[in-house]
Image (cartoon, rainbow, N blue to C red):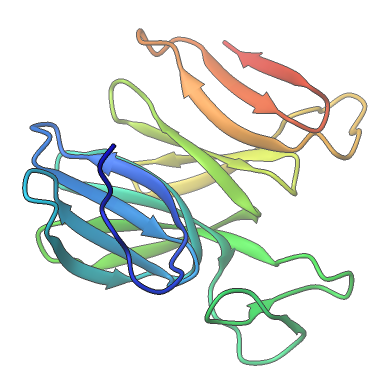
Length: 193
């Protein structure tokens, strides 16, 4: 067993490799950063600042998608301690809406898009036209149109609206015609055609 040591307490979360396997990107959850790593030499490279609590990564060509569980820094309102930066919360102590950041890996620059509460796992469609974001505390998933750069949101249970579905991961079948959402709160996998 070999390790890539990370100083401090960054809490690595999501990982994504370039197609050639030469570069590994890591979401550093508590540091609010993306770390670029040379996968062959294990040398730590550039660090890019993210919004709050980066969690999952998906990479296609030179575009890196990052789900941020606590979204944007907000100077006013309630805050709860977490990592190196307090997180904005509602009156019950839950993190506010998260974000999806879209990084250009050549420049390290990113755009930001609002999503639901506590975005977790993300999945890029096989065609690369859509990115799905599982919004764990909202019982929804967001669909990001990667070409138009637009976001829409879908309720997972439109009939009963039961709370606590906890969608935490998404995956497409290789052909891309079917989407699967893991719902940890109800111990199910929801399938969308």
